[in-house]
Structure formats: C-alpha cells, structure tokens
Image 1 (cartoon, rainbow, N blue to C red):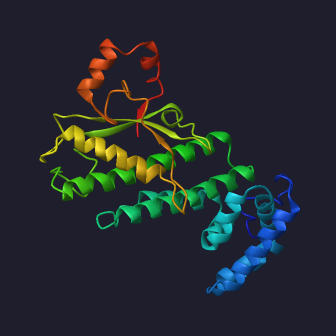
Image 2 (spheres, rainbow, N blue to C red):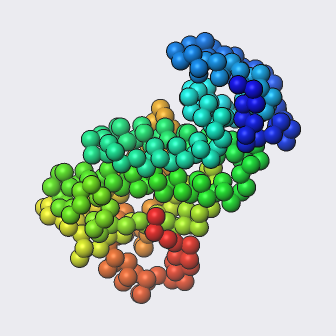
Image 3 (cartoon, helix red, strand yellow):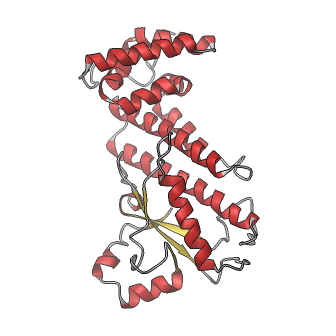
Length: 293
C-alpha cells in the first residue's frame, strides 16, 4: 500500500503544524486500538499502514492535533476514512452526498432513521470537505460550494420524507408519491449564504418555505396552513435537533415575511401582499441572494 493518498496529496509539507502533540498521540493510540478491533483484515491493514505512510501520516497527525471533531470522525468511521485517504476528498464527498440524497428506501424510513442517516452523511461530508481544504487541494469556492450543495441535498431528503408522510396520512394526494416534491405546491428559498452558495463550516441555513394554495393537492381536514406549519417545525427538528450524532444544519426560518406574526410556512399570496405593502427595502434586499433549493 505504498503511496497511500499519493494520488491527491503531496508529501504533506504544507499541512498545518502539529499544534498539540499530546492530543495527536492520544488519537493515534485510539486509531491503533480501533485497528486492532477491526473485523476486516484489509481495513485493519490500511489503518496500521496509514500511520507509516508519509503523506497520509502527516495529514492524520495534523487533524489529530488540531480538530477533536474531525479526529473522532476518522476514528469512529475508519471505512470512510479509508475511502477519503485512498480515493481522495472528491470521491469521498460524492459518496456522502449520494448517501444524503438517497431515494431508495425513503418510503419505509422512519423519522429516527432519516435523522440518523443525514447526521452520518453530514459527518462524512464535513470530513471529506475538511480534508480537501486542509490538504490545500480544494480552493475556497469549492469548499463553500460543497457545503452549500450538501445542505441542499439534506433539505431535499428531509422534505421528501415529510411530504411523503403527509401523503400516507391522507393530508395530501400527491400525484407522484415517489417524487413527493413534484406538484406538492411547496418550495424552499435558500437565503443569505445558502442562497449564494457561500456556506462555511459553522453556518446555519436560512430558508423561507412558501406554498401555493392553488397547486397544493390538499385533501385533509386540518387546513393546509396548519399542516405546512407543522411540516416546517418537523423540518427544523430533522435538520437542527442535537442528538448523540450531532445535527445536520441549524435551520432558521425567521427571514420569512413578517416572522413575528406569520406561520413558519407562508402562502405565496400572503408573501406577495407583504412585499407589496409592508415589506421595506431591507426585506427586498434580503431577496437578492435568494434561490430555490
């Protein structure tokens, strides 16, 4: 396995310095313990050889010495760490993005299932992006674009889950239940950094959820406004609730028209009235970076 990570990183001379040697050694010890406990022989061999490889060893030491979060991600998920080191951050990020956007099992997926899947995918995507960034092979625009694109993928997955749930509960009669977003009448606008594809590692995501009453196939009894307001609250829970696996993205819906008096999902009609009558220049300026996500 000579030349591990050699296809995408040089000898590691430009990596961050090992700022905390004690932390790095602690993580290396945990890495070796995880290798000893690995059931897969090839994975165990990879983990042991990674420490001896010049480029991979320096990269891992830089991470272990400087980032507890990334260190834990590497040690707790060595199979994904292997993909990232051997295939590079581009391939690893694509795998995490595909995991987040996966449609194959969303019909049977429970709320707990999707929360776990998206948090696992987020941890993996963050690791891939950070490795590309730390190693100097991803420019800033690629880093922010990847973070923003991943946020869109997770939002899409969460909305699919929630809309399909409303269909199964008899609240919506979706014409294409296998593609719940289509013809649901609901759409999300990404605002601020998300709208501009400029998310950074600590960014929350600003959204406005709009729905078109004339196009929403609502057949329930509670009222479309109430149902979509509940959906918005569940979306924030899926995306932002802190669990043992962390969170996906903190989600803020307060950039919607008149947030103090409107529900978290806004009808297009009320939005139009607001921007024509009460919305000041600051509210209109906030729409400059807005885009559907």
